Amino acid sequence: MSSDKRVVRGQALHAAIAFAVFPVQVAAERTNRTGTNSVPGSAPGRKWRQRLSRIAACARPAPLLAYDYRCHFLSVRTMQNDMPRMKRARGLHGETPSGSARADRMTIPGTSTVDDIARMANVSTKTVSRVINKSPLVNTDTRDRILALMAALRDPRGSRAPAAAASRRKLIGLVYDNPTAHYVIEIQRSVLDALKGSGFELVVHPCDSNRSDYVDGVRRFTLQHKLHGLVLIPRVSEDELLATALRETGCRYVRVASIPLDDPMRTVLTRDRQAGMEAAHHLMSLGHRRLGVITGPRRYRSSIERAEGFAQHLAVNDVGLSSKCVYLGGYTFESGVAGAEYLLAQTPRPTAIFACNDEMAAGIYKVAMRLGLSIPEDLSVVGYDDSPLACQLSPGLTTIHLPVSDVGRLAVQSLLGRPTAERAASAMPGLQAAVTPRLTIRDSTGVPAGGASEVY
Image (tube, rainbow, N blue to C red; front, side, top):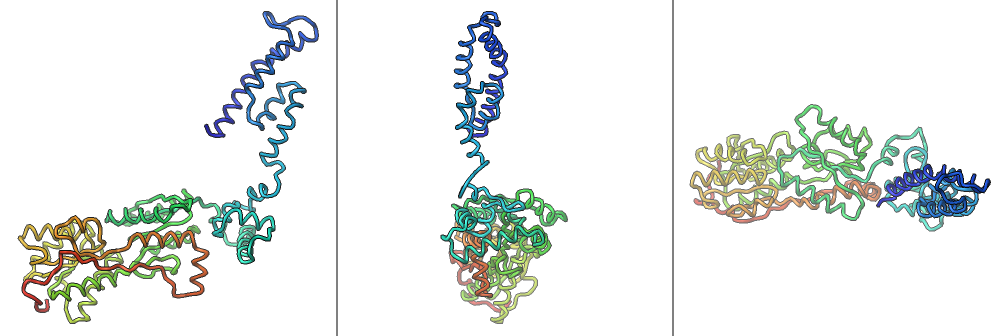
């Protein structure tokens, strides 16, 4: 049973006993004075006092409750016997705490406590307590950082951001609007793994970035849960209006994006353009010259970077990619089917197709099978993400592997280890958290049937 429940039960039980026995106690005292029993059918006053003492002993509540309730109903002698216990209760409940106990419960003017200061300074609560108590066991740099933070929180003229941060709970939010279920799940798993042992928990907020009020929804989500920070993944990470709104609330955030969109300490780069170039290089090295691309939605910067990186590498090597070789997909299986139908209907048809995610690549498999085309003999296919689907397809899908576990780890480090990271960034202005995608070659790519073809 929790302490709160015990306290409530103690209050109710003792109050009931006290009101029940109070008239009997008065009668017993009258019996003691007059020598007669004024309560019909009752024992002499001495027995009533003994019985009352036994009841009180059995129903004795928590120490503080003993002071609050029993002083009204028990005799002066009983209260005097309980006085040492009541004094201890007052000490336990903070009337005259001393030393570290006083420091542990100290509240900085405003809304911040020792726990808040420790979290913001990236130190333990014990270290903050030592600073408050002027202990010599704290090094100078740490002491100065904590004192400066406490001074900023005390100053009503200063920024509201530190005070707002001090009221945050130990929660990290994940905001997403992404049609690729595997990517979202893997991001959640990687963030949870990175949070293990930190005392922080993860809450998620799916949203529809097409709605005009979605930014307000994310703001309400942040303020309602008093989040310590947010991890934003494409496509919401690419929205500058959302980033501006979060800065106004004083909430930390990290944007997972394909290009630098913000301060380096607020961004984890995924280098999608480089990955698109690697996919093009692989297909060209096999001899493919007639190539097609199924992109993601244009409003996703990652889609633009992957497709442009692919086209850029082809152009550098004097291989053209006309507009009829590019199909605008939607990061879904259905759009992959539609894109493959469009590209494979061209004359001459491409010998290789790059799909900007694995789900669309699976749609290409379906169309190739329906048309009687063999993979990779008649058509080579490259995907992106290296999801479990890539190994489930037959033949296995050659795809770009994105180290999502590193993405989550870097995002959490940026949110929870910001003081250390900021010092490193100031020492190295070019420092940028980033992951490097790599090509995973399986069985869906090979040499074209007729060898290297003419430029398409």
